[in-house]
Amino acid sequence: MKKTKLVAVFMLFFLITSSFKAQIWKKIKDKAVQKVENKIDVEVDKTLDKTLEGKQKSKLKKYVFNGQVTITMETESNDKASFNLFFGANKEIVCMQMSTGETNHIYNIITPKKIETFINASGMKIRKTTSAAEFSGYNNLNKIPSKEDLVKTGKTKSILGYTCNEYEYKNDGGIVKAWVTQGNFPIKASYAPVLGMVTNGPLEGFVLELNFSASNGEKSKIYATKIDQNKNLTINLAEYKSLGF
Image 1: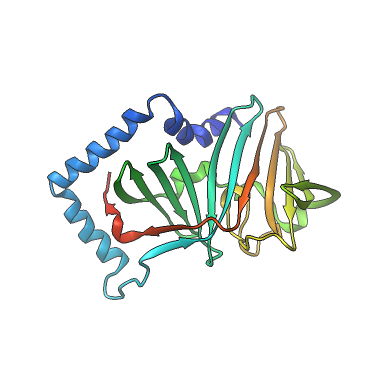
Image 2: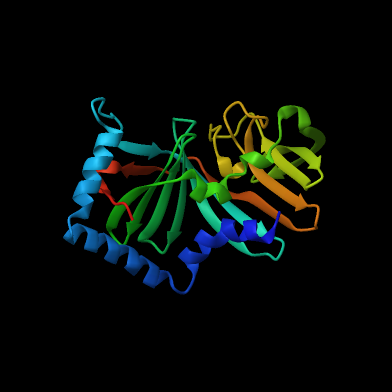
């Protein structure tokens, strides 16, 4: 994996957690206020409502999640960034939460078809649609080969108290190792692109760790550090103002 790709993966986390986070949140709020004052958001609302509702008005009013897995991403130089993944009844929807402090949160609702971003910056709630390209750094599905190319090594290890089987894939670019738990894992989910999980994909079960070793010697990994099967999150769409910045 090239360094430029690693930079892309951690760029958003750096922005949130850097010493300039206060200025960043201020800029977000200032943009929101400016658009409200100029009434631009009124037109954006109309456009969005027509797109999402139209003649066949959407019944979706909120996203509800009731299980959380905390994920850490780490490079070979021990640079780390953590975020939460929330899961709910719909196995094709996952929410990625990134936070700074107790009042500033970014929620990215990821589905196979779209990504919606909800920003809660010190009480200022705004939402926008994010392109899949903007989140390519968090999608590891292309690193997981077909089922025929995966090799179950027979190795096992315990991660957070759950027994995981190791699956391995080798090619000229390097090695991918996935540690997957099955059976009694409390969160029933099958879709999490950052973990290489997709419904009916080659990895059957919940991925608790991914290791990447590039042929040039560079290494990185993504792994679960905490599981809370009773952690609830509700995102009410009516509380967020749609903006197009």
